Amino acid sequence: VKKGRHRRYEEARALKQNQDLDLDSIFDSLEIGDREVDGDSPDFDRWADENEDGADEALEESSETA
Image (cartoon, rainbow, N blue to C red; front, side, top):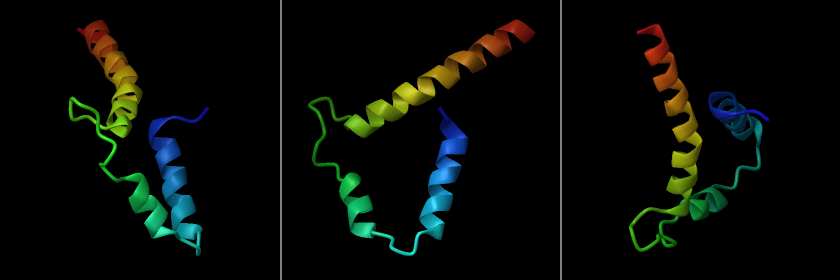
């Protein structure tokens, strides 16, 4: 399973190489209409969950070196 930066790099590369780019579907996926009561979108929650693991690892590394 590819994570983080490498996955985003491959997605961006695929978008650049794809001649049949469907901008409407990309913008539809970014709509903010499905926000929850607290104001956070489900996409933000997924992003936060993905980046939470990296933040924990960075904290562990910095505490080990100190």
